[in-house]
Length: 221
Image 1 (cartoon, rainbow, N blue to C red):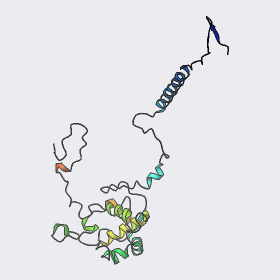
Image 2 (spheres, helix red, strand yellow; image 1 turned 30 degrees about the horizontal axis):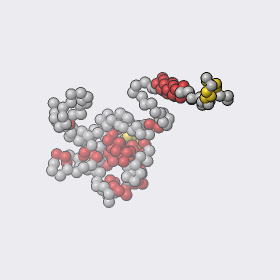
Image 3 (spheres, one colour; image 1 turned 180 degrees about the horizontal axis):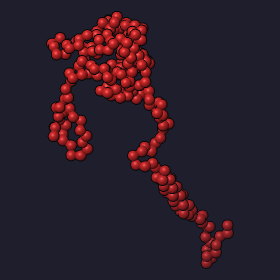
Image 4 (cartoon, rainbow, N blue to C red; image 1 turned 120 degrees about the vertical axis):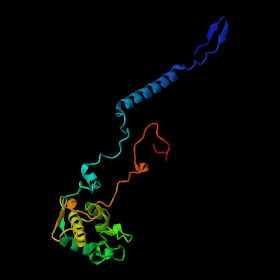
């Protein structure tokens, strides 16, 4: 570049200053991009109460069914399809239960007797068996299905559980050996200790939800 003549004085050409506008433009672009991203995310946010992160896939009713095995034991609501007799139950029992519970459920190396004791709850020498303790027969089905055999719980079929329940009830003299146990007949079995339980009316056993102005823990209103 040529020097400029300023009244006879020559001035060297100066390097032009860099404009600060490109930096501002970049900053504005970043801000604008951020605002745009926030706007898009906000627009895509689900409704209040639903998680914004969605991992996995929705669970199916079929998958839930394997875990949804609750039974209302007072009336048998939730009992599954199936059936069994005491004769069928003896075969299942001898193959999968006898090793722990002994012959004819009279007691074995792991568990005590499951037969007898009826009426003993009004004495000082209680004998705990399904026949003497359970207030409702569906409890026997529910417990057996969930917990037995001890080394392989939840492996018995519904028919096998109904059959084992029929066998135990028959050994306790609560049903005829020819009776068929299913979702309809099992809740109808009258258990000797049905009226042996009383409601717990103590105020500290009531679980009342409190969301505001709650009393301190341990204080009962």
